[in-house]
Amino acid sequence: MTILVTGATGNVGGNVVDQLVKRGADVRVLVRDPSKADFPAGVEVVKGDLLDVDSLRHAFSGVSSLFLLNAVVADEFTQALIALNLAREAGIERIVYLSVIHSDVYVNVPHFAGKFGVERMIEAMGMNATILRPAYYIDNEVTIKDVVTGYGIYPMPIGTKGLAMVDARDVGEVAAIELVRREQSPTPLPTNRINLVGPETLTGPAVAAIWSEVLGREIAYPGEDFAGFEQNLRQAMPGWMALDMRVMAERFVSYGMVPEEGDVERLTTMLGRPLHTYRDFATVIAA
Image 1: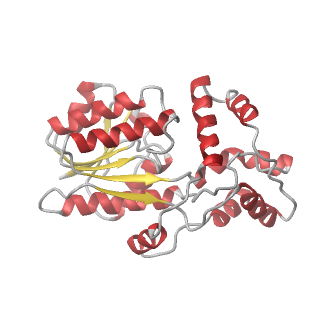
Image 2: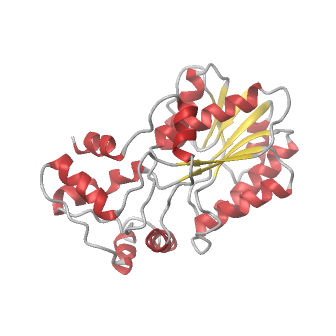
């Protein structure tokens, strides 16, 4: 049988595909433009998107397991509901859904609230799924490297409560492990939830200190200027998304993203290795 991966051209989805291929799974990917797809040999590429009902029905044909990743877009919630309805129509009973940690707490953050709604739908419809709840991605830091190195500041307003930042490689591997576990079970497994976190819970000053050590010069954490943060983001993204990111940052500061007891140990056991660290990632992208 076949595992379908959505969002496969992104960082997390690409890691999921690679990890599934390493485990000998039959993988199909849903992409908007197959001419731009670059996947390992043997991966089946299907053209379509999550708002195209006909293409989804075609992609779901013969699929036994689904990895559902919805990008942060204005109609993310609608995309997820369409995909899950059509997955149920196709008889797919093995699902791994990429949600977000603390979706029930960050209730005013649009893309968190949307994922919280999808989790509720999965429960209400009696679907069987692993719900993955990643914290802030370490990989996001690629976008601020030039600010760190050029201006000597760490610009993300993440506050002092702490974020358990997670590497997309760890997210992808855990997702693949869960997909294979569900795929190989003779009967659909009950729903479970996994917080995806990194090995450390880092504050703004702590991240700045890591960059100072990696670069060999002082990097400062200037504090939180949410209005300025939103304005800077508007240069690279639509206004609605910049506001989404702003209110998320406000919740970073007021609540943080702190793991639950046992989260790190659970992930380390699943992976059979230590989790990737922020320092290692910073060292690589700084080089």
